[in-house]
Image (cartoon, rainbow, N blue to C red; front, top):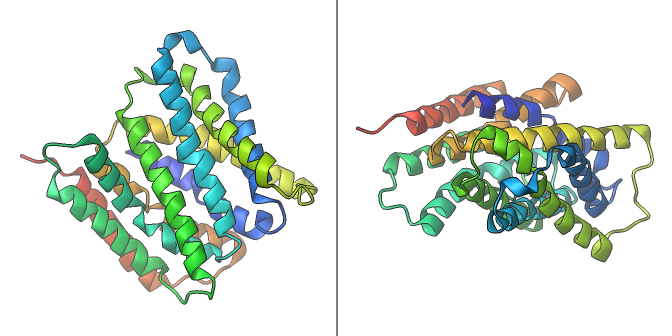
Length: 282
């Protein structure tokens, strides 16, 4: 669990960086491709394809394409319709998608009711923290975010259920994850990108390098490795911990208003969701 907590803190600034400095300035398709390509470059020197059967290699490519390649295409475009706060609000349903995908696709014989309770508590806690007045474009943004949430949730569950061996073995094949993400992002960029909106400033390139190597490269490796060490409910509830962390980062670095009472109440509900998810059944 501590790895999921660490990655959550690691990712906390990503929403604000995208919303404040990239959205509307750098084409979303271009930004996603650059981010995925940088992460792929980080893992290519470690790639040992012979250590994984072909079918599992193809599955890992597909997981990467879904979990972050396609997911980021939806997410970046949502920022054109929503504020950072609204994007954070609409991510609250991800825990439910994680639980739903795991149950429906993997036909679990005995899904613990507390797992659904934990996911529901995570949604409620995040809503308490982040519910606010919505903009006129919220329907389009909402649908884009839900598509992103579903891709991210499905990718997490697929990776968790795919047998890949030890953490060391996963490190040697993780380039496949970003091959899938880079291919999907690259095809979308060639088809739809506006190449008049390329990154031009040192700040924009610096943010993309951080998002590519740090938040995506190191972050997704750590998150997916940790996903195999926790149960589905713990994984689901941790998806919403980014909301209070993101709000604190917004306040600390950009001085954005934070309703501390709502943050405290919502964080307490989120913490109770983690406790419920972590509790072992008899």
